[in-house]
Image (cartoon, rainbow, N blue to C red; front, top):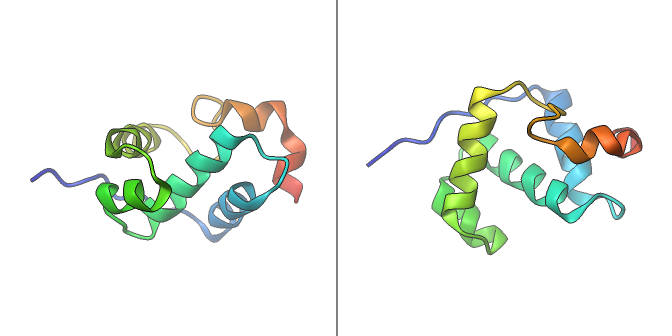
Amino acid sequence: MRVAPLIELTESEINILKTWSRAGKTPARLMKRAKIIVLAAQGERNEVIAEKLAIDARVVSRWRRGLHRHALPGSNKIFPEAAENPASENR
């Protein structure tokens, strides 16, 4: 069985992602990504995250691998909507 990459976040990064995952004006795609990353950072398996968010486990795996390769958070490669809507960071 393959092991998913470990995701380590700072407290500040976790707070930003949690804000994005709850904000009413945050685009749906950004909210979903934020939830995936927070759950992954909490050590949840891809299958568990997929079940909790009612999405395909391959989507979770893709975001986990992408995050592992790039800087977090707010990397325009991972969160392009955040660059377009910087006000969402300050909520």
